[in-house]
Length: 84
Image 1 (cartoon, rainbow, N blue to C red):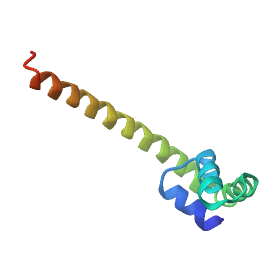
Image 2: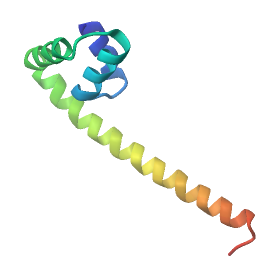
Image 3: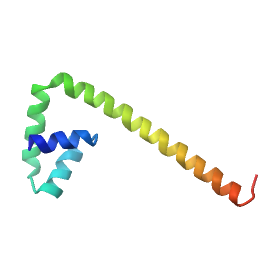
């Protein structure tokens, strides 16, 4: 389970997302994933504090990029329709 949790971390998942993913895709009971995640957090407190900070930054950057792409698509659509 620890190895699969590490994979979840590579995909910037939080605990809830990881529990759901492992339950759905690996048939691991949520209580097992949750327990292992909690123990990993206890053993690696500094890592998870940094991970959570960096994850929030990544999510913010991802949302900013999504908004920029949406604006560019709207501008391109408007330009292709001949609007000013």
